[in-house]
Length: 496
Image (cartoon, rainbow, N blue to C red; front, side):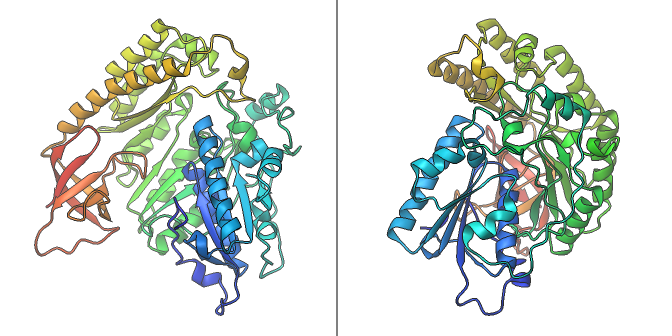
C-alpha cells in the first residue's frame, strides 16, 4: 500500500542523490500532523537523499520506514500510534528492515514507544533531525558538519523557563535538553508539497504559557531563523518554480524578537513580496496580542501578501481565557477584528476555539457562541478540550464529560456553518484569482483550486466546472474565475 499522507516531489533529490542508486537504501515517509511537522519530514528526506538514500512512496518497497508523529491532542496521539503499528506490520511481513519513529510523540513517550512497540528500531525527537541518518542506517555522503548556531532567547521565554514552563521531569524518557534544532537555507530539503507551493518555517518553539498546551515542552523555547536565511530559501524556492509560500511557526508574530528585531514579521513579508517570481505570500498562526499596526499596514500595502489572518483566539469568555492563561476577551477581540477589517479591506479571517475547557460553564460557553455569531469569521475550527499530562490544565478540577464537550463543539460548529453559508453566497458573481491545483478528488469532471481566501489544506475548495474551450489549464497556474455557486464551505466557479 502507498505510504499515506505524503506526496514526495523528487525534483530536488536529483541534485544530491548518487547517479547509481541500485543498491541505495530505500526510505518511505509517513508525515502526520501540522505543516510544521511536514517541513521537518522534508528536511529529514533532504538529509537522507543527500546521503545517497532513495525515497519511495510505497511502504512495501521501503527498506526503512519513518513515521513522523504528532502529539498535540489525544486523537493525534492515537492516530500516530495506529500508524506506527500499521507500519510495523510492513516490517514484520514485508521488505522493511527498519522502522524509525520521529517527531512530537517521541518527545512525549520516548521510553513507552521503545518498550511497547519492539518493532521500532530507533526514535528521533523534534530537536534531533540530524540523527535521522544513523537512525535509518544511512552513511553520510559527506563529512557531517553541524552549522554554528547562535542560541538566542527572549526575556519572556527565560522568565517562563524559570517558572517551570518547559519542565518535562514527569515524562519518562524525556532527554534533559529541550529541543533547539533549527534548519536554515543551507539544510537539504525535499518538498512534499506540489511544485508550485511550499511552506517555510521561520521560527520554532513557543514561550507562551497556555495551560491547555504542551507544545513548548515538545518543541522547546521560541527561536527565530535568521532573516537572511529565510529570504535566501524563499528566493531559491521561487527560482525552482514555487509561486506560493506560506510562512509557519508556533507563533509567527513573535518572529525576530529574539534578535531584538521590531516588527520582524512585517519586515520579512515586505522582503518576500519583492521576489518577482512569487505570486502569493501568507503566514499562519498570529498570536492575538502580537498583531501590530505595522503588520496590518504591510499586508494591506502589498498585493502579493494575501489578505488573510489566521488568529487562533481559543475562547471569548474572559474568565475561561484567564484559566487558559491566554488573556483577552470578547470586547478586546471585537476591537482587534474591527481594526483588521478597517486596515485590510476584504481581509479573510480564520480562527479556532477550544470548547469544554475545565470548568467551562453554560454561561461561558454561551459567551463564546454569541461572540462567534457577532464576529462572523470566514473560517473557523472548533476542538474539544483534550487533557494532556504535562499541561497546566491537567490538574484543574471540574472536567466536563467527553459527551458534553462534543455536544458543545457540534453546537458551535452549527452556528459557524450558517455564517459560512451566508458569507459564501455573498461571493456569487464576484471574480477572483484562482490557483489551479488539478483534477478534483470529488469528480474527474471537475477541476479544483484555491483563491487567496483559501490557505493550503485547511480551508474549503473552489471547484471549477467551466473552462473556455481554447484554454488548457495547468496545475499551478493562476486564472481569473467567477464564482457561480456557493455551499457551506466550498465554492463553484468558472474560468473567465
